[in-house]
Image (tube, rainbow, N blue to C red; front, side, top):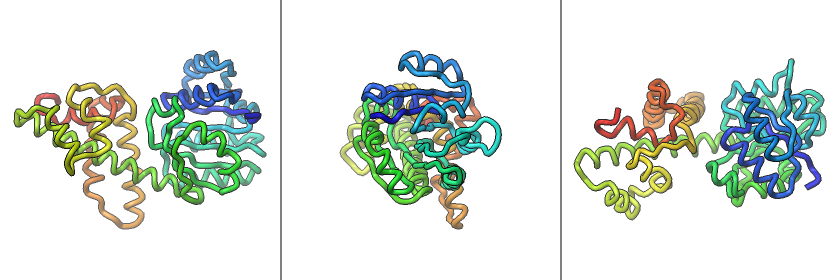
Amino acid sequence: MSQTIGFVGVGRMGANMARRLHDCGYRITAIYDINSASAETLAQELGSAASETLAGVTAAADIIITVVTDDAAMRGIFAASGDSLLIDAKGRTFINCATLSPATHLAVEAAAVALGAHTLEGCMASSITQALDGSLYLMVAGRPDVFESVRPILEKLSNQMRYVGPSGEAAKVKALVNMVMNINTAGLAEGLGLADALGLDLTMVREIFSQTGAASRVLVTDGEDMQNRDHACFFSAAHAAKDSGIALQLASQLGLDLPLATATRAQFERMVKAGLGELDKSGIAELTFRGRS
């Protein structure tokens, strides 16, 4: 635990990951977020420093964990000029946890390696509570020796971890995970919406779903919330739209037509356009239950 750790991006997931590592005895030496107030608040909580610059995080930490929103944000924090995590990055290791396109992970790795730094993908398939209690499911990709060098840190964040290969591979798998999850979420919303319109008891329907081919992980995490209209955000509709888009971009590059993924992304994009993008993905039920939208 002698390695020092910096965080870039301390929203719902990043902040809880930082708390978890701090509670496990690691020194969180620098925190940066585009929302400086969030960085300041978390830094005070953890006895850390809120860095005013990205370069300051690199200077203050051996390992930098990034949890940003999308490809554009990722390319921004690893910019070739101006304030950047790449300034004096030699010897540093970057663990990049956001859901991004494989091409972006590969571009960041190339830029870091050219400067004598290292990168690793740590794609997450869990939510906020798992980030805090160290039970994330991680899909890891990058050089095996880099993975081994930070494995102790990852093991504090994850109780299930899968190394899937070189850089870019974890991003592919994560895109598939979220694509299928989003399809399941939209399907469940339609099933429960129809059940409601038929006058069926939704608690009964959910119980029957759980014992039949309609069962899914999404039924466990989102079914009751859809019924009760409780859409407190654990994974936003905006992120669902973005992540389905990554999968569809990969499919397009291969000449594949994915009609279910296409329709699902369109539903989540409807939520975003309606100003509902920051609701949890369960909020897609607002589009399918009669009388809600």
